[in-house]
Image 1 (cartoon, rainbow, N blue to C red):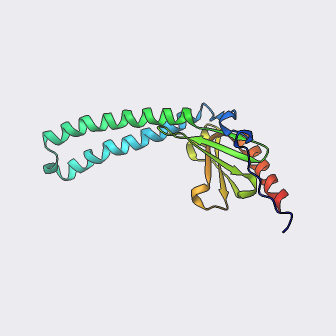
Image 2 (cartoon, one colour):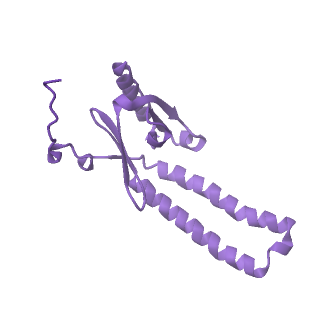
Image 3 (cartoon, rainbow, N blue to C red):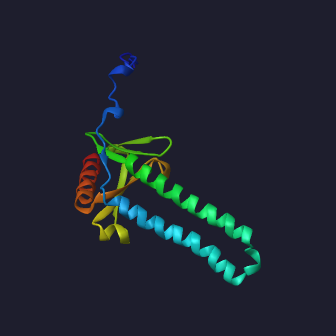
Length: 173
């Protein structure tokens, strides 16, 4: 214990994640996002129509006017925010960690050191598979709040990323 030191770290010399060049999601992924949104919007439109067929007394002219305004506004906002969110997402792999950036109003950057990664999964959704895309899920020791999902990666690249991460995990064992 007599050789113990606790020197102050100069924070100006720490590596800055803000300077990392992030890789954007594959351009085809915006199509996957928009197709998913069309499905959601279709459900939002169909629910009042179906309800009005079974309970017509609930839907007066005023209700249809309100729905006629709210549904298109909601739909447009959903599409705009999804496009903005798509453009802000990015990922990067460094020597010791993986970074994922996302957010619309506030940009969040998650940095996960490889020594915290416990499991890596590759998922292909039905629509994503059609476009040759996959999603990488990285599970950490910190629980679900520190796990990340990186969608919109070409399947071959996603498999390479999974192998890279699995290799990093194996080296730690």
